[in-house]
Image (cartoon, rainbow, N blue to C red; front, top):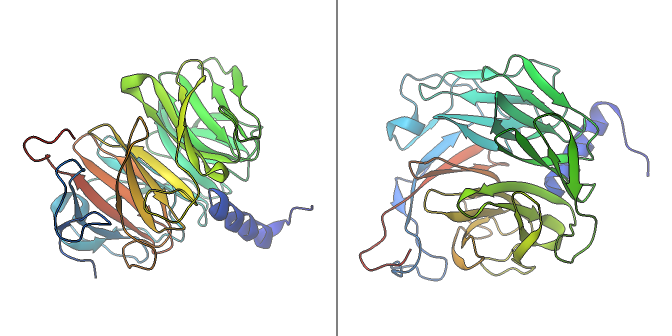
Amino acid sequence: MSIPTGAWGRNCTVALLLVIVGCAPMPRVMVPYDSPHQWPADRPQIRLEGTITLNRLYRSEQWFFFQNTAQTSAPDAEYLRPYGITFAADDIVIADPDRSRVSRIAPDGKSTFSPPDLFLVPIEVAVCNGGIAVADAEAGTVTVLDDSLQHVVREEAGFERPTGLACLGGRIYVAETTGHRITVIEDDGTRWSTGSRGDGPGLFNYPTMMSILPRDNELAIIDSMNFRVQVLDLTTLAHHRSFGGLGDAPGDMPRPKGLALDSRGDLWITDAYLDQVSVYSTDGAYLISIGVSGSDLFNFPAGAASHPDGRIVIVDSLSRRLHVFRRLPQPTGSDR
C-alpha cells in the first residue's frame, strides 16, 4: 500500500492515527454511570471542576485552570486537535498533531510554542531528564526539547510510529505502534525492545499510550487493538498482568486512547468509542466510569494527565477542550 505524501497525505496520516491511537456546567460531583443519585462508599469520588476551551484566541489575567472559575479559554492559543498532555511542574504541555506543534501553558496563562516546522505529527509528550520528550508519529522520532520548547536537546530516530512515551531517570520508554513493541532508550543512547504482534501476554497489537506505576515498579501500556491494558515490569519489561476487553459496557475498552495514574494510585483510561473515562485500580479492578456515548461531556477523549495535588486533566480532542477533574477524600470507612 502506498503512503500519500504532501499536505493531503499528512491529513490522512493524522486521521489514521486518531483512529488507532488516532458553556460548561458549574462544578459538580460526578455520579457513577449506574447510580444517578448517590456514590457507593467503595468507589472513587470525583468532582468536575470545569472546562478549558482551546479553540479560539482569548486573553485574560485570570485563567480558569488555577483560578477556580467555571469556564474560560486558554490565552494565546488556537488548537486544532489537542491530543497528548502532561504536567511539567504546574504547567501543562499539549501535543497538537493537526497543528504540528507542542505548547506549554503556565499557571498565569502564558503560552509557549515549539518552533514552526519542527514536527510533523506530534502525538504525545512526557517530562524527562533535561526537558520535554515529544513522540512524532509520522517522522518516527522522539525529540527532547528544553523546558522552553525552543531548542532540541536530543533526538532519536528510526521508530515505527512512536506514540506512547514515559520517562524515568535517564530512560525513555517508547511505544512503537506499528512495530507492535516497546522500546527502551537508555541514557547512553543504547536501545532494546520487547514484544511483537499478537494477543498473548507480552505481545501487542498497536500499543499506544503508557504510564509508569512507581509504587510497584511497573509500566502500564494501552494495547489498543487487543482492547486491553498490559502491565509490565519497569526494569525488565516482563509481563505481569493484563485487564480490559472488547465491549460497549462501562469499563470496556473498544477504543482506549490515553491513561494516567492519579494521586491515589488509580488508573484513568479514556475511550473514544464510548466517549467516557473509566477508573481502574492498578491490579485491574474496575471502579467507575464517567461519561457515556452520546452525552455532551466528551467528544473523543484522548490524552490524560495527573497532578500530585489531585487534579486530573482529560483532553476532549474533537471539542478542543480540557476537562479538569479532582479526586475527593473518600467517606469515612471507605477502602478507596
